[in-house]
Image 1 (cartoon, rainbow, N blue to C red):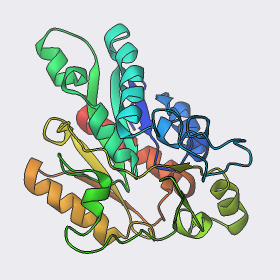
Image 2: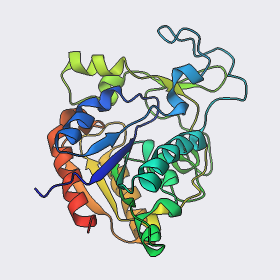
Image 3: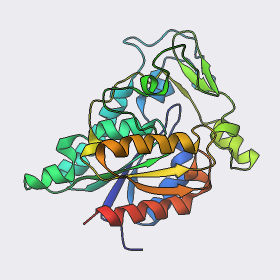
Length: 276
């Protein structure tokens, strides 16, 4: 495998999550010489949701002053991390978006941060592509919620979602839903790291799909987002902006834990395809 150590990976984690269950993946990338960042996104940061004691959170408390953080706040945080990496250090960056983090990775991959745009201006560095992991490929102009729900008819709550008084959402049974291919003690361990967040109502404004090379990992044993749904989103996006590089694995929704080395290999393979 060719070296990838001139690339930085920026991971946008999924909804209701923290960077904790991504740590084995992060460490495996770093072991291959890939500098990796995975910040806590505001929309699922308990310290920003006014839930009281974060060790024993109360998701029915009033929202914080100014309301709950939204998708645009997540994207801004990622952009704030990207700017010094790219503008000051001239780094080449691979964006990685998992689950709802696909929206964040796409929104944050602004034109002025893309390598092709920067190269035309004589600047070094920039985003070289986006690697989606069982991610939601939301069309430009839609939100995750609007894209995922029927256009006509009642809202259909996703499996395992618990709704609270002022709009927060958490998950139930994450050990069986998100971590279904792990041994039960490990699945329960990671399920305890989940948090909560508001609904995914921010509209995607940035069409990074049309500007960057894209890869998508289909998780074929996923019970949260069945492979047929993933394949449908990929097909829909391919019709608009061209074929994505497709990878597949026999895992549930969290291959970062159950297929860590395979996932790192897929990321390295995609880097080789797009880096030159």
